[in-house]
Amino acid sequence: MNILLQIWQVCVREMRILWKNPIYGFCMVVFPIMVVVFFTTLMEKGVPEDLPIGVVDADNTSTTRALLRRLDAFQSTRTVNSYPTVTEARHAIQRNEINGFIYFPKGTTEKLLSSRQPKISYYYSLAAKMPGALVMKDLKVISTLGSAAVGQATLRARGATDGQIQTFLQPIAIDLHMVANPWSNYNVYLSTVFVPGIFMLFIFLITAYSIGTELKFGRSKEWLHMAGDNMMVALTGKLLPQMLIWMAIFLGYEYYIYGVLHFPFEGSAWTVILLGLTGVLASQGFGIFAFGLLPSLRMSMSICSLWAVLSMSMAGSAFPVMAMDSPLQSLSWLFPLRHYYMVYQVAVFNGFPLLEAWFHLAALAGFMLLPWPVIGKIKNAMLNYVYIP
Image (cartoon, rainbow, N blue to C red):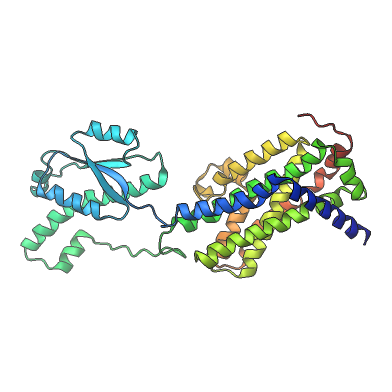
């Protein structure tokens, strides 16, 4: 009972600190809400539309103009300019005015009608991966449509039926079904990992900051005395109010994406709550560990910043971990966001039982236990270290 009273006293003290210091309010409430609104509205349409492209039509025939009209009808791209030479179009890409262009050399239609295989070139920029891939897809489709149109006219002149023409031009028809996201909504894929990743960045930093400021402002001995010189009680009382605030932010975010934006959701509500709780506790555990590893406000926050930024790449959402080099695949297990993302993929997005992701849940539990090896070092720092700016 005495321990519970000490935890409560430290909690009350921490709530006063949270209320008086505006940095907590901004980093724990204002900025996370801004992040949610920014990312979910940035990709509100799901897939980028009307990406600007250019045209270099040296042939300028009815056939090439018909192909360009078809290109303009695609959802992802929009023709914004026509250039007289390839050099000028390339300079437009370098100036970031267009994402790509297609080039019809002179004699394209003549070679096409005489089956002499004209060369149609298309150029695109992968400086931004998503728009580059979408532009490449549309330009590739248009490049193949030219020969298909000529083949269709030739076969129809020979008396072939529409079914025979379709079979000849496209022997294999692809019936594509995207699992759990038939709309190809990139918002579903990216916001569900980037937003929690930024939440974890804030949790890392605020956890290390709240411990380090006890040393910075000379309150560390008072803090420990209030906890009965028990470092675990002191940390529990300090981080419990923060954990409740972070859980409220996580649950509000999850209600917003699943209840308001209707992101695909195959798991149960308890799975989402458990995922949010383990994500928060694992992040706080890592923040405590970072401070215990280097009991310095500046150095511990630097470690947290670096680890959180690397988490975005190592989570596996933008680039699959299985395609990384073996050392990086092993390194990916050291990031809480990676395990959060895998549990989300398995249990929430695809609806499999949590048992299928038990190893990742165990890894998150391991991050929660990270403070244990450094508890003694943190206590020693609070009692004996002198803060050095």
